[in-house]
Image (cartoon, rainbow, N blue to C red; front, side, top):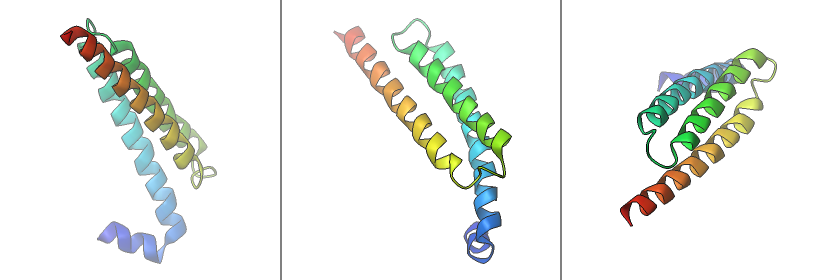
Length: 102
């Protein structure tokens, strides 16, 4: 509720703060994806998981490096790239699991 009220009263500052939070979330997401990929290493699709993690970490770092000047449009672009990469990873892992089960 406080975050929403902050966005209503101070939209520019709220958008920039949201950008910073997204950067932190991307880095954390990337670290966990890399760790999960390394743990599932003998299974098919592990490299895609690590690659998705690296892309997420890079997205977070790029947001931080460009902040605040690119803080209003970059998160959407980088979020899209990261989400597409994560989707491809999950498809690769699912296909690998299907082959392992057969």
